Image (cartoon, rainbow, N blue to C red; front, top):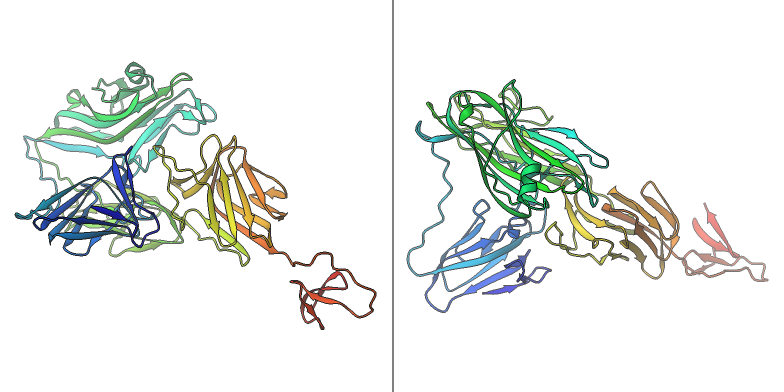
Length: 550
């Protein structure tokens, strides 16, 4: 097996510490056997690979990318197959990013009969004797119908519960800016109907870290339950987190005492100045036996996934065959009176799309929800440069909470940005609401703007969600720097998150100290230093003075 950059811009790498291989957009993987023909090749996508998984093509045979199973499967008959990585992350959770193929193992089948990868089948309808899903919330697109009840909040804390788009989960934490803050906040479910339920049970995936151990985690993270209209009580459950790592597991609780009733659940998070850990939750299910098997309709799926897009995005909605899809764009919950989906539609401003799928009997799916943030593409000045980090035309590596890639220099046209590191390395970060940003940090983080030798910087415009910097010279006001400098440095006083920068330059004339001589005739130069006999319309240096001729 050979990995190559091919027509791409980044060499493939093998990450020993992450135990995977990474091939970037337009790169190739060549698999060759000297024995029998290969009939199947399966790449197992690594944990990192799901974010920027691209469309994969092969010079022979057929390739199927299964984003759910995290596999790339080739079938055919050949001794030599070259796989090419697509330009965009079409199958990844970050579809606007450059494509990649990251895999931690590869299986090659030679000879024999090829067994194609089966298409995923819908879950069969449960029989009355089996446990059916009464309620579920995956937390893969947000908090769903859960609400947040902040009981104790201390400055500078503005929230405890938040959606983690990258990991498709919801989490609670009161650790902000290096501070452990005292807080209490509950994540509360909608009413769950168990009136037809028997032997009800709850399960959810959880992890907990930075609590200093299991006992502290159990004290800080508890589960509550109440009957509709009743009082909250503690609900004992089998804890799956260990309180000191990101190791996750399936937690369970017995809800049989609430069979035949309507209930609500709450995840109660508390913290103090000693421990303010992070509690992660996803994939919650309430299951029970029922006398009548419920009709389960899967929620519609949006393409592309929610996120930040430039100028506009075309959104399509898919559901199982035979279902009708109704959607809204104003944030209201959809019903069968809402807009019937018939074709993809364009969004040109930030919009929350909500949709349901409905069968012929009127049974509706859970509500699917996605928020698309639309930002206008900035325009480069005539004499200068635009550094649009959201576009990332330089293919800079994107950092995450698990891995940091320091950014040291970016060049665009005649302008170079040079970065230094602060308390955290200056890095490119994917912000859920704003897309890719350059993030600079205090205690040394800086950005220096340097044009070509014959030019000067006269304006620097920042588009930033947070900007707290000091300029080495000139004037900075309202995120716009003005002055005239051969180079200017911006030093971070606090974390600064920059979406894009527009740099405007003023070309120097090359005329140093032009003075009028003793002659009486006019001595005329153009602004770029050429002597002329006559001044037409424009800007000139006449007898040592700058003159505008109209």
